[in-house]
Image (cartoon, rainbow, N blue to C red; front, side, top):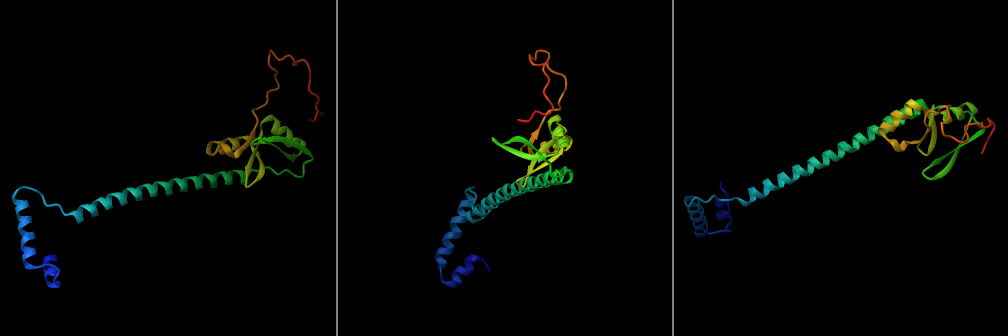
Length: 174
């Protein structure tokens, strides 16, 4: 049963209105004009818009999933490679976002930090000491996770250093 028949049966249109609509449609087809079904056009437009929204939402979800995966990799690298600090008695000062912070380390850990063999990272508001090689892997994923990574120290002074003749005492603490 067509829509026209249903409307006639419900009493919403008369036979005269139905014939008039059929004639108008027939004339439009005969004149070469295409009859546009507005409902179909609206539905097609809505499908296109919905597909675009779905693509954008999927891209956003994928980016969030990749970000979570990177954070999980960073967390795993830091937790598996963190060096134990074992109640060090030396305070090692460093800058974390403009504030001077200290961690207590042993003498061996302090030398490793100074020489660039260890790096300081921050995970869940706690500082961890990790090897420099692991720190470079973490920095590739997120450079903001590395708080301090000194360059490999070279014992050779610069040629034009005016204080090259003066040795720094080993016990100097400031």
